[in-house]
Image (cartoon, rainbow, N blue to C red; front, top):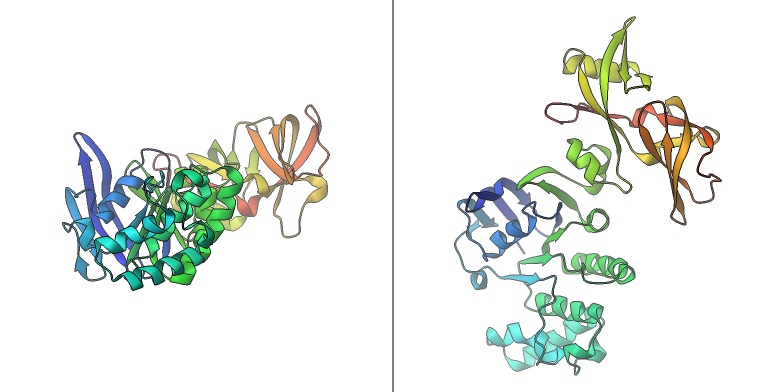
Length: 367
C-alpha cells in the first residue's frame, strides 16, 4: 500500500480547465472522497491518478515514486466504474480471474484469490453465473471483487453506487467502507452524493470548478465550512444562507438580514470587528440549529423569531418546516412527531452559537 500525492495538477480540454492546480495528499490506507457537483473535475482528477489522462502540468506520486507519465498497467491500481464494466460473455469466476490471467498468475493462485474475494463480497454462490443472471448490486460486487483480487496499491472508485436503487446504495456503502478497512487499501472515491461522502470518507475533498474548496473530515467540513459553496453543498437540507449587513450600534455589533436584526455574542462581534469595518456579509445557520420555542435544547444562545409556516416536508423521522419571517424564509428541521401545519403561526429560536458568517466578496468564512 502507498500514499498518493497530487502536486499542482492541471488538466485542460481546449479552453476549459477541468483540473486547476490541485494539491492533495492522501495517506497510506486512507479513504478519501472527491465530492462535488457534475462538471467540477472530480472524475478527471481520478483519471489523472489512474493514468487514463495525462496532466498538462503537475505531478502524481505514489509514495516517493513519480507515476505521472506511467501507463495504468504500471501503477498497480484497480478501478471500479459507475457502469460495472463486467464482461457479459464470462462467468463471475472468469470475470474476477481475468486481471490475474493477464498478469500470468499461476492457476492455483488464481483459484485461491477468486474464492477469497468472492467470500469477502458474499458472492461465492454466484461464481458459475453470467452477468445477465445477476442483479445490479450483484454485478457491482463482482466489479469490486475483480478490483481487489490483484491487491492494488491504490483502489479508485468512480460513482460506483449511482446505478443502484436507494436501499441497495445504503447497504453497499457500508459494506464498501467495511471492506476498505479490512483490506487497508488506499482508496479514492468519486461521488456527487454528499451523504455517501459523509458516511464513507476518512476525509472529504470538496471540489468546484476544477479546484479543491476544502479538505477535512466529514465533521470538519460540516461544522466549519471554509466558504459559502461548502456550507451550501454539505448538509441535507442545505444550510440557510441569506445576505446581511453588519451594523454597529451603541457599542454592539448586529446582523441585519432585512427584518431580522440579531445582536451577536461578544466573541462573535469581536471576530467581525477583526475582519474589517461594518459592511455586507452572508449569514448562515443549519436547519437543525433552529428550534421551536418549547423544544430548545440546553446550551443554546437564543434569538427568538416569529413567523408563519409556509410549507411542510414530512420525511418520516424528521420534518422540514419552511418558516416565513419578516426577513428571509428559513428552513427548520424538527422531529417527525412535531405537530405543525401550513399556515400555523410559530415562534422559533435560532442558536446563535451555530451561526456562520462569510465575507460577501470572497465568500470565505469569518466564523
